[in-house]
Image (cartoon, rainbow, N blue to C red; front, side):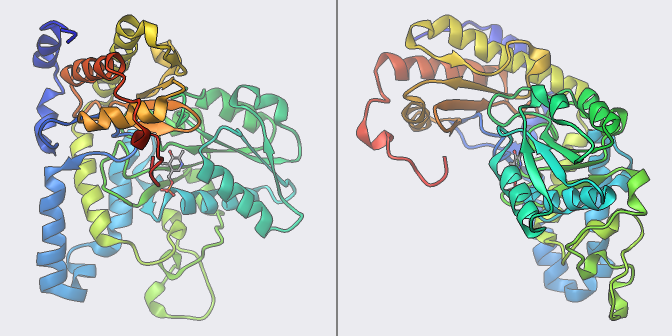
Length: 412
Ligand SMILES: *Cc1c(COP(=O)(O)O)cnc(C)c1O
């Protein structure tokens, strides 16, 4: 067994973020490197869920909408997320899923550029983003189309027909960070709007939406924000667009006066008009609790630790597993890399499964990507050491070479 020295324990002892790990319930013996897909459970989430369900729903029933602030929770939670993304509290709301929010904000961007009919995106963008854009275009008939251009070549794809550029800030496969400020500027120079998906950045790396001049954004609640499975998602609309913004899922929660029960839709002032139906209060209350934790951690410290952990993971795998043919897909430059690392390997799926049997949880992204996410709030330097020791054993013993490890589960 590879033995990696005490330096990892020393790094953990010196880590100013180490105090956050106790806020999370992680199973004994598990090295969790998949917080970029489903964040770990904050202990406070359990308590909050009990309170919301037992004390609020159970005891004050429907009065809870007023008495416990349920009706404003999408806005109050949005306001807590705002500083994590360089937004004003009044520019962020929490609702629905990333997919649905993307539909709403890209529709709003199209409405804001009525004589333009093209949405530009990267073909390597997260599939649901591509599917939503396709669906949105189809719902507009022949009118609107999607144009694919790799993130590095976006500028060449811009023109007077482009209404919006829609990209991920951090690529879900490679972890490459897009230059949000430069691409937003190029979009604006061409008369288009910029829509950003922050799903793989939110809570792990610095985001400055207003500094970059972004128009709209969406982001995931259950990844680095630790809001739990299916947590609702964030949605950002720059203040300058809010008064005129129109989105098509015009439900009553986005109405100016939902409890007047009038015929005819008139949008609420401000960001509230991006709400649609009744918010999922249990999920939302858990998300609020987990955002409170992350809000106590200085984002610069989170980012620095994340960079050290991913750099260390890359260096150890390349040093100790050189003969096994892992190919680094993520940028080597830590300043261009988000908070996860992706290595390609032809046996990637089976290797990830063999690691899971050893308690090291990463995930697999087709066609052959082994993905390891680090969540700087709760992952440790010791986790990186453990993960690499186990990987080396999986490779030395060919533990991945079993037929049952090659059968793909429905969630990878
Ligand atoms: C995780 C993720 C999503 C998830 O979308 P849901 O609608 O919440 O399922 C969307 N886009 C990106 C870039 C993601 O990483």
